[in-house]
Amino acid sequence: MKDNGGIQKVFETQMENPLFPVPLQAMQARIDFHDFYSGESLEIAKYKSIRVITAGLNHPSGATGYRIECGGKSFCLITDTEHIEGKLDENILGLIEGADLVLYDSTYTQEEFKTRIGWGHSTWNEGVNLCRTAGVKRLGIFHHDPDHDDVFMDNLARDAAQEWDGAFVIEENMDFLVE
Image (cartoon, rainbow, N blue to C red; front, side):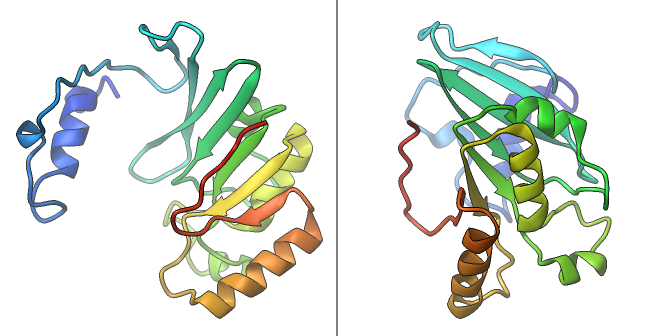
Protein backbone atom coordinates (compact mmCIF):
# COMPACT_ATOMS: atom_id res chain seq x y z
CA MET A 1 0.00 0.00 0.00
CA LYS A 2 3.02 2.28 -0.04
CA ASP A 3 2.71 2.49 -3.81
CA ASN A 4 -0.03 4.49 -5.55
CA GLY A 5 -0.08 7.24 -2.92
CA GLY A 6 -0.35 5.05 0.15
CA ILE A 7 -3.21 3.68 2.21
CA GLN A 8 -4.74 7.12 2.84
CA LYS A 9 -5.08 7.68 -0.91
CA VAL A 10 -6.73 4.26 -1.27
CA PHE A 11 -9.37 5.18 1.33
CA GLU A 12 -9.88 8.65 -0.15
CA THR A 13 -10.47 7.12 -3.58
CA GLN A 14 -12.99 4.62 -2.13
CA MET A 15 -14.98 7.51 -0.71
CA GLU A 16 -15.13 9.64 -3.86
CA ASN A 17 -17.95 9.83 -6.35
CA PRO A 18 -19.25 7.67 -7.90
CA LEU A 19 -18.32 5.09 -5.25
CA PHE A 20 -19.43 7.07 -2.19
CA PRO A 21 -20.79 10.62 -1.85
CA VAL A 22 -19.06 11.65 1.40
CA PRO A 23 -15.31 12.39 1.36
CA LEU A 24 -13.01 10.86 3.94
CA GLN A 25 -12.20 14.33 5.29
CA ALA A 26 -15.83 14.70 6.45
CA MET A 27 -15.40 11.98 9.07
CA GLN A 28 -15.37 13.33 12.62
CA ALA A 29 -12.48 11.20 13.82
CA ARG A 30 -8.72 11.29 14.00
CA ILE A 31 -7.47 8.64 11.60
CA ASP A 32 -3.83 7.61 11.49
CA PHE A 33 -2.71 5.87 8.31
CA HIS A 34 0.30 3.56 8.26
CA ASP A 35 1.54 2.45 4.87
CA PHE A 36 2.83 -1.07 4.25
CA TYR A 37 3.83 -3.41 1.47
CA SER A 38 2.10 -6.77 0.99
CA GLY A 39 4.20 -9.35 2.78
CA GLU A 40 4.97 -7.14 5.78
CA SER A 41 3.88 -7.86 9.35
CA LEU A 42 2.56 -5.07 11.55
CA GLU A 43 1.80 -4.64 15.23
CA ILE A 44 -1.07 -2.43 16.29
CA ALA A 45 0.86 0.17 18.31
CA LYS A 46 -1.82 0.75 20.93
CA TYR A 47 -2.40 -2.99 21.34
CA LYS A 48 0.98 -4.67 20.99
CA SER A 49 -0.64 -8.06 21.40
CA ILE A 50 -2.37 -7.69 18.01
CA ARG A 51 -0.28 -8.66 15.01
CA VAL A 52 -1.34 -8.22 11.37
CA ILE A 53 0.46 -10.27 8.72
CA THR A 54 -0.08 -9.45 5.05
CA ALA A 55 0.44 -11.25 1.75
CA GLY A 56 -0.07 -10.32 -1.87
CA LEU A 57 -3.04 -11.89 -3.64
CA ASN A 58 -3.55 -12.75 -7.31
CA HIS A 59 -5.88 -10.02 -8.64
CA PRO A 60 -5.63 -7.93 -11.83
CA SER A 61 -5.66 -4.69 -9.79
CA GLY A 62 -3.51 -6.04 -6.96
CA ALA A 63 -4.89 -7.05 -3.57
CA THR A 64 -3.70 -7.94 -0.09
CA GLY A 65 -4.72 -10.76 2.24
CA TYR A 66 -4.62 -10.33 6.01
CA ARG A 67 -4.03 -12.55 9.03
CA ILE A 68 -4.85 -11.03 12.41
CA GLU A 69 -3.41 -12.76 15.48
CA CYS A 70 -4.35 -12.01 19.07
CA GLY A 71 -4.34 -14.09 22.23
CA GLY A 72 -3.27 -17.24 20.42
CA LYS A 73 -6.17 -17.01 17.93
CA SER A 74 -6.05 -16.12 14.24
CA PHE A 75 -8.48 -14.77 11.67
CA CYS A 76 -7.65 -14.43 7.95
CA LEU A 77 -9.35 -12.32 5.29
CA ILE A 78 -8.63 -13.50 1.75
CA THR A 79 -10.64 -11.40 -0.67
CA ASP A 80 -10.15 -10.48 -4.32
CA THR A 81 -7.97 -13.40 -5.31
CA GLU A 82 -8.01 -15.70 -8.32
CA HIS A 83 -6.65 -19.22 -8.06
CA ILE A 84 -4.81 -21.07 -10.79
CA GLU A 85 -6.45 -24.42 -11.60
CA GLY A 86 -4.53 -27.33 -10.11
CA LYS A 87 -2.05 -25.18 -8.16
CA LEU A 88 -2.49 -24.13 -4.54
CA ASP A 89 -1.40 -20.53 -3.90
CA GLU A 90 1.71 -20.62 -1.68
CA ASN A 91 1.16 -17.01 -0.49
CA ILE A 92 -2.29 -17.92 0.77
CA LEU A 93 -1.20 -21.25 2.26
CA GLY A 94 1.52 -19.49 4.25
CA LEU A 95 -0.88 -16.83 5.46
CA ILE A 96 -3.71 -19.14 6.55
CA GLU A 97 -1.68 -22.03 7.99
CA GLY A 98 -3.32 -23.28 11.19
CA ALA A 99 -5.81 -20.38 11.31
CA ASP A 100 -8.93 -20.58 13.43
CA LEU A 101 -11.12 -18.85 10.83
CA VAL A 102 -10.54 -17.93 7.19
CA LEU A 103 -12.93 -15.84 5.09
CA TYR A 104 -12.19 -16.68 1.44
CA ASP A 105 -13.25 -15.09 -1.87
CA SER A 106 -15.80 -17.58 -3.20
CA THR A 107 -17.51 -15.53 -5.87
CA TYR A 108 -18.04 -18.26 -8.45
CA THR A 109 -18.94 -21.90 -8.85
CA GLN A 110 -16.36 -24.07 -10.58
CA GLU A 111 -18.37 -23.88 -13.81
CA GLU A 112 -18.71 -20.08 -13.64
CA PHE A 113 -15.01 -19.70 -12.88
CA LYS A 114 -14.05 -21.28 -16.23
CA THR A 115 -15.67 -18.36 -18.08
CA ARG A 116 -14.33 -15.67 -15.74
CA ILE A 117 -10.60 -16.35 -15.63
CA GLY A 118 -8.79 -13.03 -15.33
CA TRP A 119 -11.56 -11.39 -13.30
CA GLY A 120 -9.70 -11.83 -10.00
CA HIS A 121 -12.02 -14.08 -7.99
CA SER A 122 -12.20 -17.69 -6.86
CA THR A 123 -14.49 -20.56 -5.80
CA TRP A 124 -15.58 -22.09 -2.51
CA ASN A 125 -14.07 -25.38 -3.68
CA GLU A 126 -10.63 -23.78 -3.85
CA GLY A 127 -11.20 -22.29 -0.40
CA VAL A 128 -11.89 -25.79 0.94
CA ASN A 129 -8.76 -27.18 -0.75
CA LEU A 130 -6.57 -24.42 0.71
CA CYS A 131 -8.06 -24.67 4.20
CA ARG A 132 -7.78 -28.46 4.36
CA THR A 133 -4.17 -28.32 3.21
CA ALA A 134 -3.28 -25.55 5.68
CA GLY A 135 -4.98 -27.13 8.70
CA VAL A 136 -7.56 -24.36 9.10
CA LYS A 137 -10.42 -24.92 11.58
CA ARG A 138 -13.25 -23.04 9.81
CA LEU A 139 -13.85 -21.55 6.37
CA GLY A 140 -16.29 -18.69 5.85
CA ILE A 141 -17.44 -18.57 2.23
CA PHE A 142 -17.99 -14.95 1.20
CA HIS A 143 -17.71 -12.37 -1.61
CA HIS A 144 -20.79 -13.83 -3.28
CA ASP A 145 -21.76 -13.21 -6.90
CA PRO A 146 -24.74 -10.80 -6.76
CA ASP A 147 -26.54 -12.98 -9.35
CA HIS A 148 -26.73 -15.83 -6.80
CA ASP A 149 -30.09 -15.69 -5.03
CA ASP A 150 -30.96 -17.02 -1.56
CA VAL A 151 -32.01 -20.45 -2.83
CA PHE A 152 -28.72 -20.77 -4.72
CA MET A 153 -26.76 -19.74 -1.61
CA ASP A 154 -28.69 -22.19 0.60
CA ASN A 155 -27.78 -25.00 -1.80
CA LEU A 156 -24.16 -23.83 -1.88
CA ALA A 157 -24.06 -23.82 1.93
CA ARG A 158 -25.38 -27.40 2.01
CA ASP A 159 -22.87 -28.57 -0.62
CA ALA A 160 -19.93 -26.87 1.08
CA ALA A 161 -20.82 -28.31 4.51
CA GLN A 162 -21.08 -31.79 2.97
CA GLU A 163 -17.68 -31.33 1.32
CA TRP A 164 -16.00 -30.12 4.52
CA ASP A 165 -17.69 -29.71 7.89
CA GLY A 166 -15.60 -26.62 8.69
CA ALA A 167 -17.17 -24.68 5.79
CA PHE A 168 -20.12 -22.31 6.09
CA VAL A 169 -21.61 -19.47 4.04
CA ILE A 170 -21.32 -15.91 5.35
CA GLU A 171 -24.67 -14.15 5.64
CA GLU A 172 -25.50 -10.48 6.06
CA ASN A 173 -24.99 -9.19 9.64
CA MET A 174 -23.31 -12.43 10.73
CA ASP A 175 -21.07 -12.23 13.80
CA PHE A 176 -18.05 -14.45 14.39
CA LEU A 177 -16.46 -15.76 17.53
CA VAL A 178 -12.90 -16.93 16.94
CA GLU A 179 -12.16 -19.65 19.47
